[in-house]
Length: 61
Image (cartoon, rainbow, N blue to C red; front, side, top):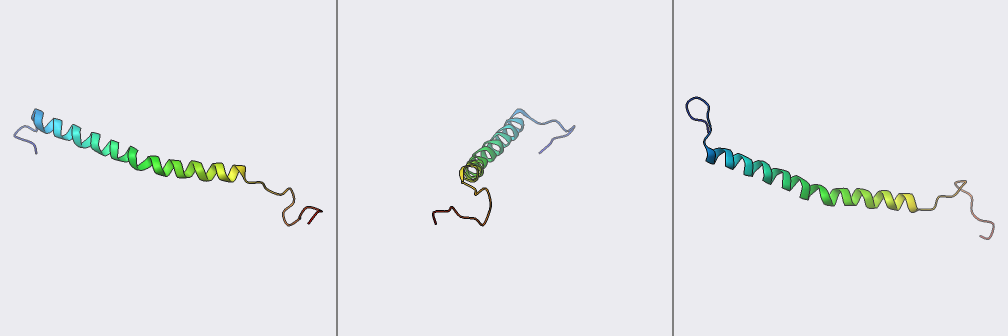
């Protein structure tokens, strides 16, 4: 990968840049469904009605 003196050519630097960009884009695309699922679960838990006293039912039942 490196030549004498440890210097990289322009083509090698471009290839590394493309690899880093691809890795970052892949990470973003992989994290979007995960974050959407986490948000949907949190919203569902926040909206669910909780009884004020667990184990008690309303007088009509």
